[in-house]
Amino acid sequence: MKKILCLAIALLMMVMALASCTGAKNDGKKLVIGATGPLTGDNASYGISVKKGAEIAVKEINAAGGINGITFELMFEDDVCDPTNAVNAYNTLMDKGMQVSLGAVTSGACVALTEEARKDGILMITPSGSQKECTQYDNCFRICFTDPDQGTYAADFISDNNVGKKVAIIYDKSNDYSNGIYTNFVTEAGKKNLEIVTSQSYTNQSNTDFSVQLQAVKESGADLLFLPIYYADAGLILTQAAQKELNVIFFGVDGMDGIIKQMGEDKAALTEGVMLLTPFAADSSDPKVVSFVKVFKETYNNETPDQFAADGYDAIYAIAEALKYTGITDTTVADLNEKMVGAMTNITLEGVTGKMTWSADGEASKSATAVVINNSKYVAYSK
Image (cartoon, rainbow, N blue to C red; front, top):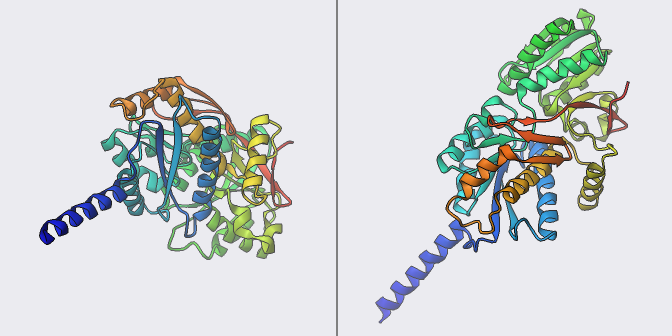
């Protein structure tokens, strides 16, 4: 009897352990959405913002009764902006019952997850993975612009709005994100008759001292410095540029969103006038944006949402629109994945980052604008 009892206890413990790994049984009235992103480390601002935006969307959808009677559950894992960690985190999420993936927040990690999502056949919508390969498979979509598009749109915006004439560039040649934007920016600048007076590069092994690059920019006579880089490096460049008394307009893309937090109150003045290409402006009068910003501030201690928070918010609502289109009322159906993926090219989302539709290659079609930092706040650009 003792042996039988011990065996029974051992079996019970195994069942309980298995349940803890795979998550609670889904009754078909819940859609489990998983995501990975940096919640710690140098790029944590990106992941934290996406998570906060997504959480608000999930809360709103569930409070309204869900979609087709189905509520959402969001699970978020820290990948520290690392592809290997992201894959491990993705597998953890699958073990916990993930049915739809937000992929990863940053591009390198997201590209790694496309392979996993392809094997599992689940819908993946990355809020902010902008590298082209983030949508390399039919089941992969994105909310943000691609790296090449950001380069093109930035050159167009600078030229069309006469923001600058003589352009200098500092980019990270060891980073695919930076390289992709840089290449298309230079190509489009040529078409727009923007003069590239100097292009300066660095690598992730030399991203602390920018004195040589900034001196070259100063000597070039540039009136605008284009920075297709992440906010951590941009913060150092702004600090060192001030020491050199460099008088240019600083213009970045989505990777620089987070620069206000990076600089903090002590160096807030250095961000004054910095411009960012973005599909989201927190001071917009659009009722959807006004509502989102209000709820975000109420939820997160009066914090103003950035573009990454808006991307996370829209990603959840894109999933909601896709689920609504399928008409599915039970998420345990065998063809959930197929129908969710197929719905993406048939929906339109009126999001806080703009009205968007998706093509079969996973790209969102929407317009871009720019914001200017004024008193540590993003303000929509106007001539």
